[in-house]
Structures are given as C-alpha cells and as structure tokens.
Amino acid sequence: MISGIKPVMSDMASKTSNRCPVKSEVAKVMLDYPDKQISRFDIGGVMLLIKNGRVMDPKSQLDQVADVLIDNGRILRIAPDIEHDEAEQIDASGLVVAPGLVDIHVHFREPGQTHKEDIHTGALAAAAGGVTTVVMMANTNPVISDTETLQAVLASAAKEKINIYTNASVTKRFNGQELTDFKALLAAGAVSFSDDGIPLESSKVLKEALDLAKANKTFIALHEEDPQLNGVLGFNEHIAKDHFHFCGATGVAEYSMIARDVMIAYDRQAHVHIQHLSKAESVKVVAFAQQLGAKVTAEATPQHFSKTEDLLRLAGANAKMNPPLRTEQDRLAVIEGLKSGVIAIIATDHAPHHSDEKAVADLTKAPSGMTGLETSLSLGLTNLVEPGYLSLMALLEKMTINPASLYNFDAGYLAESGPADLVIFADKEKRLVTEAFASKASNSPFIGETLKGVVKYTIAKGQIVYQADN
Image (tube, rainbow, N blue to C red; front, side, top):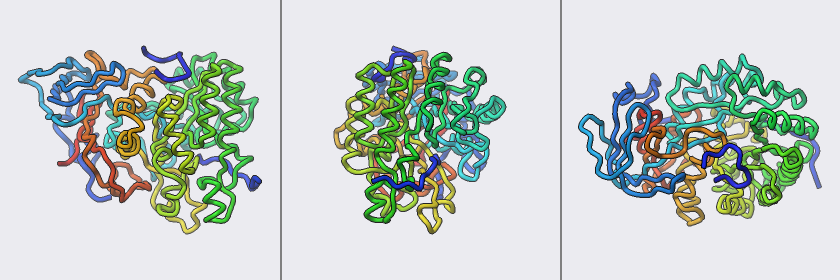
C-alpha cells in the first residue's frame, strides 16, 4: 500500500535562470516492428503455459514455484503441476515470474520529436525491459493540452501491444498560467496531469490546479526545480562549482519547491505526486507532509538511487539529467526513502535523445535525460536487492502494484482471472549493458557496466511481446 494516500488504491527542459545562488543486433522484440523478428506467438489466440517458475506477486505476497496458465489475455490458473496439451509451454525453471512492470514516467516524444523516440519504439523499449504498462508525459510538440492532440496520441498508442496511457498538461502549452480543461481531457482519456520538465512557478496557479484536480478526482504530478534558485541545469551544484566552474542545479531549488507544494496540497486536501526525488532534504520534506496527513506520493528513478554526480566526469552528457545526479549522501537518502515507504514508486523518467544532440561540444548545451526502460529492473536488482537494501518482493512492489495502484490500473499483480501481463527474468544472471537498445536512443550512462538481471520474456495481454536471444 502506498504511504500517505488512500484514494485510488485497490486493497524538462526546465527554465533556467542567470542568477547563481550564495546499436548492434537487439534481442527479438515482437511488436510488429519491421526490423525485428516476429514470433508466431504474436499472432494472438495462443494459450501459454509457464512451467516451474518462481511466481512472485507483491499484492498477495505469493512467492512459490508454480505454473501459470494464460489464455485470451487473462491468467486462468496459478498452481503447481498444471498440464494442458494445447498450450505452448515456456520453461521458467530457475527464473522469476512476476507482474509486468509498471512505469508511470516515460517520454515517448510523439508528436514532434520522433527523431528521438516514438510511441512504437518506446513500446519496444518497454517490452525489452519487462515493462507492460507505461504513462507518458505531456511535453511533446504540440504539448498534450487539448483533446485533439490527446486523441491523436492515444490513437497511436492503441496500435501497440503493451498498455500505454498518457498525462495531459496542467497548463496550456506549458505556459504556467492558464489551466487546461481537466474535465474534458479526462473524458478523452488522460489519466492525470503534469507539466513535467517545467515546474509550476506560481503558487496561485498550483492552488487552482489542485482544486480542479480534486474536483475531478484526479491528481497532479510535479517536477520540482525552482528556476529562480538554479544555475545551469543537469549539473549538481557541487560538481558544477568544483569541476566545471559554474553555478549548477541547487538542492534548495528542489526541496524548497517541494515544501511549498506539499503544504498547498495539505491545505487544499488534494493529491500531489512528487516526481524523481534526488535530495536527502526532499525525502524528509515528503515524509513530514505524509505524517501531517497530506495526500502526497513520491517516486525515485533508478539513476538517482544508483549513481552520483561523479558519473558526469565519466559518462559526460549521457549522465546529464534533471534533476541532476547528486551526492552519495543524497543517493543513500533516496534509498532510505524507498526502504521506509516514503517513496513508494520507482519510475524511470525514460528520456531518449538523439546521439548527435548529446554529442555537442558544449556539455551545457546537451539536452538532459537518459534512456531508462531497458535498464531499470537490472539497476534495482544490482543496487537495491543485491546490497540488501530491499528484498526482491519489495523491489517488485515499487515497480508493479504501487504504481498501478496510484492510477487504479488493472495491472501490477498476478492472480487467477487477472490480466496476463508478466515479466520472466533471471534475477541472478549478469548482463553487460551495450548500445544494443530497442529504443531509438542509446543515451545511457550505464553502457559498459555489468548489471544483474536479464529479462527473458515479456508477456502483455497474453501475448509474448519480447523474448531474449539465448
């Protein structure tokens, strides 16, 4: 259960300020992509029987070796020693069988920036990472601020075999002043609202947006970096000053804005979701608000619990992101927030960029963000489970049922009659991260690292949408 809120559960390019404060061959991805091999499983209508896997369901806490029988997009049965002559079998011996991952923070760049990614290649990347449900952000071109743009995006998403939802923007065209038509956008299919990439600077606008969200039984997700307190984005203030010799992104720009926003949410008794926490003080502020009774939820990214600002010196622009990678103290505080439940959700902030954009000579001009869908599970296994910070069940909880519950999605769990969205993975097997991503982009600072965890199969709506080459 997500800490700090009851309602919907089932049981950036940020502005900057001048003010400085005191692919090789990819494994088989089977989503009808022209350059990828198609499996006969992709045709649909095939009954699947997963045999002898370690079945783990964070919702029920089920953890046992069992079989899973799937037909017509649903799970028919979970039990040992199931036999069915007509089912295609998958041998999951020694593998974990878990709910398909749910990532509530991705950028698929469609419309307007499809040289970076599009909805189809984003779906490929999700499937390759074991993700079967995603929520896209609205910072496209045009911004998803109106029902016409929203409907076009959802029509494109409906062609894919994973579950794809989208936010709409809080303000029109991200102008920070004029609220969008929440009621109309929800009716047209938006699942929540965010100006992710750009903070809401006006307290008055935020208050009005929260009132509107509450009236429409939804919530707002916030990117928290006050441009009035920041220098160059994407560089933590310490490494910016000591190594690059300019003013960077400050911690106070993040946690002061979070403090303002959670208290406004508390006053309005509206739900606010804080995106990608990166500072130790931010975790403390969110914890305080939750203890006070505010309806506040929060997420952390794999990159912020895995690495520090020092990665910028090794990986360059691929390690530049908003908010930036911080200090070791901050990294450990984010992990502690995940352990305590203050941070209930792990989300990638999958932000693909073209290699030419990341390769500019001036690092400050490179766009912020990294491709993240295909490394998120491995980073959780390597940097949370392996060191003993989280159990495997707790990791899966933060990547499946918790994010699904935030949106009341029918996802993130394994149960008879439940959705047949699953990931099958080897939790102990090691992998070398290469540029062979299913995404259009390869802007990952983890290329060259050896991580634990290999996705073997991803099943969405009862169909195999990804199968690793063996």
